[in-house]
Image (tube, rainbow, N blue to C red):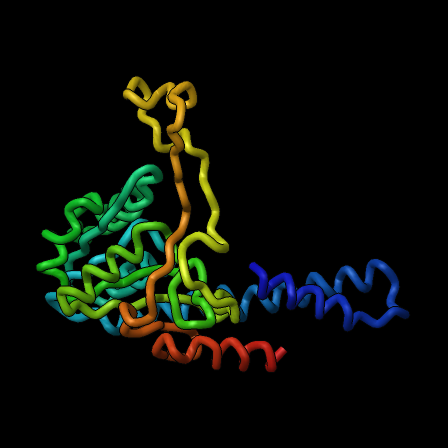
Length: 248
């Protein structure tokens, strides 16, 4: 989001002051349409197609929660006639993976669904791990839905390749050293089950519920990042980010 906002501010600064208000608005809207088409729509297609090519017959693909890019890649591979299975790992409180699993099953893809506490057992059969991204940080770390770091760490321990699908518009020069800075905290009530022992947690002294949205995955747990500019290692994130800024 920050990259898009900076681009928009730069685009507005380039507007000819002699243009009328309507002409200036039209110019900005046209630029936004082009930017969205090139950096998001086209980028998503290229990434999904590239990731689909990496899926082979007999593969068991493990993914976490729900990433639209990962979903597009899996659907594309299925349309190409590849025979593979998918393991969808999910977690509370959002259970986003349920929607991905349902969508894939509807298409006829064989899916196994489990919660993150069953990760160590189910990763044994995995051949590749595909993950989505909220952002790629300047030090090569992945900023994504909380639980992603655990999946990547377990995959590394079991020597399973971890592939991240991410548009370069999500690259940033910010450096993440932990999961506290830059994180977002979701409402604590999302963790509470109706009728459960924590239903009135607000009345319990010295009890706090923490519901962070994202975590940070170290670069050493990532084997490859699939972008619209090609397949790169985490160390190439700052280079691609700089080149993208220079191109503007």
